[in-house]
Image 1: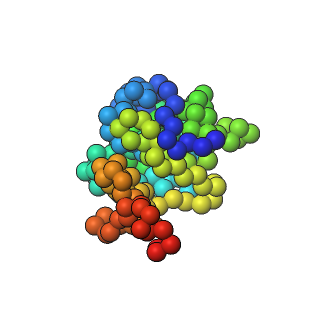
Image 2 (image 1 turned 90 degrees about the vertical axis):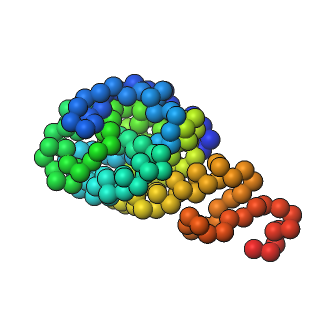
Length: 187
């Protein structure tokens, strides 16, 4: 299913965040940019490296007005236990959403049905809850939070500068493009 420019699915779930359990809904995430970081399971191998990598970039993302939501089909109780047991996961300050029914994972179309787990899906939604970036990896391929930060900056730039687009590998401060007839065949 194509997710770009679609609304995030409606959900309400329990999360582990900053030492507490709390309820998080799709309505709660609206009003700011949001990253949904799906991963297969707690207490695994590649997953903690990705979640720690995102934790290392969390302050910068917060400065860009972005909240991060880690999501797996584990419960919020398991998230807490993993947070308490792992040095890497102990660095996480963003909410870890429990999705024991798989409803959120299915809503983002990243469920591996036979395993009851999520693919490595990363989604960036704008403040209206519309998905602007969707990236899905196979289980053995880890993601880069640094590149996600770059994509956030590009998505925010395009949203704030109507008519401009960001070329490949665009970094903040670099030239953008304004599509027009004059550019056809000249790039």
